Image (cartoon, rainbow, N blue to C red; front, side, top):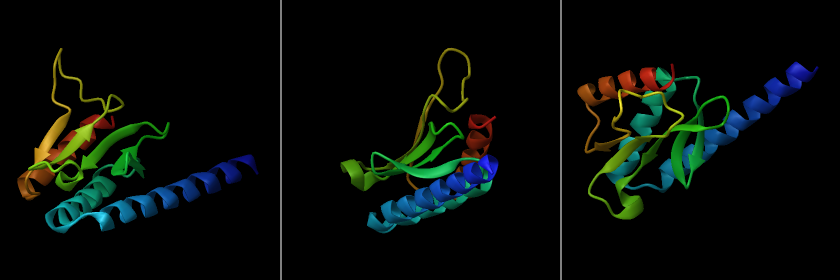
Length: 125
């Protein structure tokens, strides 16, 4: 019974998170919305273990402990000239003593999608 209750709670949280991310994406305009929507699909496909949620109003994806692994910051949020895909310390991107954790996104073509999938694989291992 406890296991079933835990499973039901997890499913409800996942559904709430998905709805929150969809609402955040709907508030974006033009290219930001298109890129955020495509990125959402890439993350769901490449890292299905990550749970969608919003973080400071941005689409984000958390691990089983609820820690945000990655997030999408659209250019319109702060009037920037590009959107970003960022990774928090819950992501295991470690590479020596210094490594990038935020990536500028001007568009999402095949090459960028492949790189993002590679980063997600490393971030979630």
